[in-house]
Amino acid sequence: MKLQLFDQQVYVQRRNVLKQSMGSNGIIVLLGNEESSMNYKDNTYLFRQDSSFLYYFGLDVVGLAAIIDTDTGEEVIFGNDLTIDDIIWTGTLPSVGEMATLVGVSQTRPYAEIKHYIHKAVTGSRPVHILPPYRPENKIKLADWLNTSLEDVAGRVSLQLVKAVIAQRVIKTPLEVAEIEKAVSISVDMELAVMKYARPGIREYELVAKAHEVAIANDSRLGYPAIITKHGQTLHTHYYGNVLEDGDMVLSDIGAENAMHYGGDLTRTFPVGKQFSTRQRELYDVVLNSMDHAIGMLKPGVRYKDVHIQACQKLAEGLKQVNLMKGDPVEAVAAGAHAMFFQCGLGHMLGMDTHDMEDLGEQYVGYTDTLKKETVFGLKSLRLGRELEAGYVLTVEPGIYIIPELIDRWQAEKKFSEFINYDVLNTYRDFGGIRIEDNFLITDTGSQLLGKYLPKTRQEIEALRG
Image (cartoon, rainbow, N blue to C red; front, side):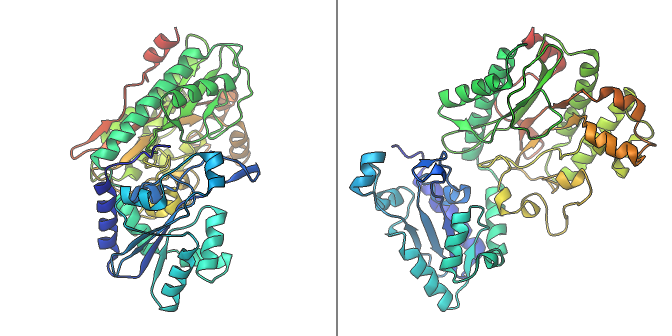
């Protein structure tokens, strides 16, 4: 096994920045992940290391944890060397000490000793800084090490550490941008393979297989379960058993995660046949116009919440032109009527996680102490609202989703009848959904599209399908 790593100094510098951010204030505990069993102990899911552990220590290896002492500067990686029984089944790995040296750490200890190290800090009344555990096994460990209950672990999470990690990881360095570019370009190839292979009579899972094929052929994997469906109105469906028919559209939302665990996240919507129908063309162009308007707003100092709202207004303007909405588009969006068609947010941060750092708390990653997340339908699903800064990497992904159950509920309540033409909307009940998504780096003066270009205009899509 060959470890995929940046230069040693990258990890040393990252940890030094974290220590400076935290000040002399106790110890930081960063947990790696374990194998997770599928249906019996030795049959495990594909291993995925914790992203924050990867960011600071780089080691994509099972069963590691680390402590940074902010008072002394000491750094320790905890882990167990392989036994001969391990080697028979898994092959050889460098020792924990050898791996630690690769990322600039000189001290290692057996894994069990981390409990004593943390107990010593607790009994000495030193702060122990932890991040929110999203895996049950890590939550159980922390409860034991901190001598507290499972329910109380959440109360021990260090908001200071959460904010320090986010402040550091949210600004992508040129090294990271290069890795994200690689992942996005692989994602482009995945989307092209899906769009070229689709045809009437096949099932969605055959397209999913094409996405996996391209990812694996590029030493990558899917960064999240593929969303490839003819029922695009269901935002995150993972059912792939439907048969594609002429007249259907396919919504393909897929992203590669490369060997360094940086990812892409792209969506295209295309006809199963050679061309969109008239209605499909009309609404596709409405979504694309909204997307282009949003992209034009991307630059430092602009709140992404404002970009989202203006993208919604462009959607409402287009929907009014095709008689699905009425009244003033600005007033319609202010009231929330557009959420009949666009229920989710315009985009999110992207990096080592598809929804970057969401495990640390969406309210801290996408919002600030002064800009709080909304709770109303539609806006509550906007993962990113804060003011943009150079170095952010994010998605732009407007859409239109025709959800019959939502039509029935709102129409029965006569909700937003001054803005929604329910009579016309009911003739679109079997329309499905459209989403178009690309990935961007915020630069000093604007934004940069990441990865290779992926056809996105209706004319380009139809030419590719033809």
